[in-house]
Image (cartoon, rainbow, N blue to C red; front, side, top):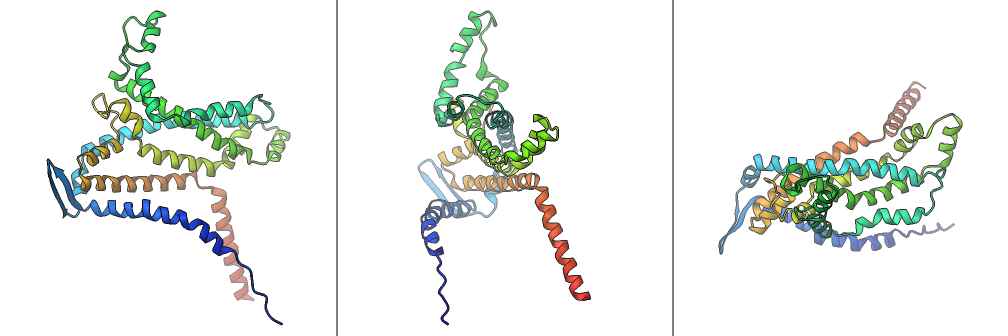
Length: 320
């Protein structure tokens, strides 16, 4: 009897994913290695003269590891946290409402489109719109004065709280729709039988949300948090345009990527590379902690139980 040749189509899978890996290797991986290489070199322009590249070891890393780094990192995290917390809370509420069949919301598709629309607007358009609306002579100040709510015009962009709040509102409006749609898809993937069984057992909607919905969508929540964290560390366009690259007032809205952009403008490739490596390391550490916090305990428990069963089976086999 001749053995039948097994048919494999794996080569076609590799062929289809090959363009992605080629693009990633050319446009992402090689520039990443080049950035790390530049971080060990002194390579900048002084007037019309280009200095370097001269190997300086860790000098660039030591040069930017100072008060400015921690100050701008603090600004970045404050802006991210103030924008992300309302984003995830409102996205969860909207996702729970629109995926609840008992509410019977009419025009659900229309509302989903409206929720997602701000995500399509460019950051530059948002920044210019808010700059015009909340300027000292803008329509918001004029309306407040016309209604007698204020007697003196408010300088929204002249205060730390005002500038940071406006930047956070813009980031919230830009991204909460995308987060809501992802969480809706995650909740709709939960079996309705779980909610029916819970309601039969006397579980109210709030208990079902915290006991069933949240644990079941934990992987998507983890993904959302990690992606948002990386995006927050890369925050650039909104504060750059809104404050004209100055991070006013007193550089309290100046982010790490705005600082990196100034190094690239100079250009100072050595310190720009060192700051990029710092950002990469911080992102990796924070994402690892987020993943560990959001990891499913049930999966860990089942893995440990499986290991114990294997050990017990080996011991029984030896004794036998």
